[in-house]
Amino acid sequence: MSELEHLFARAETLIDRLERVLVPHTPPPDWSAHAFLWRRRSDHGGELQALPAPHRLDLDDLLCLERQKQEILRNTEQFLAGRSANNVLLWGSRGTGKSSLVKAVFNALHEQGLRLIEVDRDDLLQLPDILALIRDRPERFILFCDDLSFEPGESSYKALKAALDGSIAATPENLLIYATSNRRHLLPEFHSENREARVVDGELHQGESVEEKISLSDRFGLWVSFHPFSQTQYLAVVRHWLERLEHTGLNEDWPEIERGALQWALRRGSRSGRTAWQFARDWAGRVRTRES
Image (cartoon, rainbow, N blue to C red; front, side, top):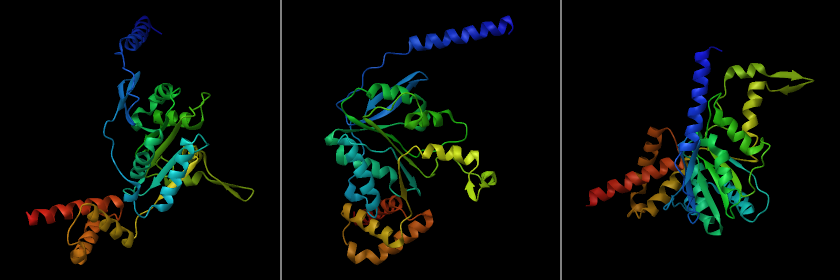
């Protein structure tokens, strides 16, 4: 190494140390809150920001998801009771209620001591800081990663693997990780990877690329799948939300509403709870505009 390169290396080390020293003091979290967001302050730390008004969503508002509700609710209640429970991966089609279900279960159980921490995918590198903050707390926390997916080589991918089950440091007993994703294995899958598969003694063995991708999702003990709604289910959710929005003349106008809802879903290319909610808001708003 030349003298100039050595000087640059020492300067970078010094700057790194100064950044660690000069990072502003972070106030302790407001532990009286029920929900938090992790906010990155620098590459070396962040803070738990209390949410005074988290999204309110009732379990009764999630129709056609009885199996998923039962699984998530049972797992979370076991966790709150101090019994063994699993980290959860909620995966499937977009708009089918994955993140809504996590929020609804939190709303149903927060009075029993459940706390929710939402962490952005890009901030997963700071998971050790979050775990250190909550390790000795009496509350029970769900660490929530919404719409999670990774590209090959992302460092936050390895941080999550270590937090789930892969580090010498044990994950705190008062924490579970719930993640939602459109991808079952959280990473893009390519056709070329199928060529890595081989047959050994009559058994099919996946290639190393596929095994690596499965290794992350496999660390979630509970997989809960979500699928697009049938037409009947979609229209039932439309009716539910219009009733919630106190739409008048629902029965008299239903043939027209049904046609409009199906056309809306066709334009969006999706029959889902999200699509039904968006249509109901649009329809109810247009009707009230005509009435005013």
